[in-house]
Image (tube, rainbow, N blue to C red; front, side, top):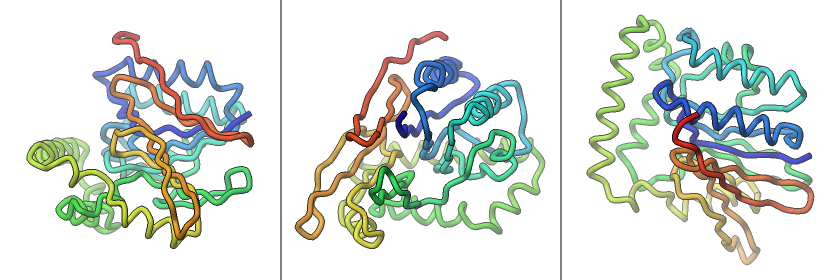
Amino acid sequence: MATYFISDLHLQPNRPELSHALASFMAEQGSQIDTLYILGDLFDAWIGDDYENAFIDSIKQLLHTASQAGTEVFLMPGNRDFLIGQDFARQTGCQLLSDPAVIDLYGARVLLMHGDLLCTQDVDYQKFRLMVRNQQWQQQLLEKSLPERLDIAQQLRSMSQEKTGSKEHEIMDIHQPEVESRMLANQVQMLIHGHTHRPAIHSITLKGLPATRIVLGDWVKELWYLRVDETGHELKRKPIPDTP
């Protein structure tokens, strides 16, 4: 048995191969997964727990089945699905994680993040993040009708794509001093996050001691996951077929 970490699946109705990849992953690895951590952006967009359709129901059922089978599933909302709430958690058996969160991983303190908080050089995004994570802003949004929320989500997506296209990649990547600051503040030697879509295992030094930053990959073309057990960790990937 082992602990698995995934992030940035960006599940969406018009890409059924991603949902199929998740179902296949759970079927193939399920007997080995003691605990599963989903570190943000499970969905490409989420406008509220009251939004339902066949696609969403299928993902809920998949997570519920895993939970019922004995797998502990922890879910950290990301920058695309920050409106995921307790209703979704109850329906799926997932446990919601705050961002950041510190866990005990086989006797070691490990810091988990989605990763967008580490991109401090992107000042405009951090201001936007602060706004949309405000509880009052979220409540006002959730009080709107579903069609209104869908329109707002599309507007925000268009704005994000336009701004992202004009920014340098370095600005949107993590800021190393922020990484070190957060790891030191939380007294950890390992950080696991997603968001940047740049999967890698980075060896760093914190106050003269070796430390590790593990970046999870997105599921756009490949299925990335991190497997951790008492003997160590391994970042792995598999191709995602074009059709389910």
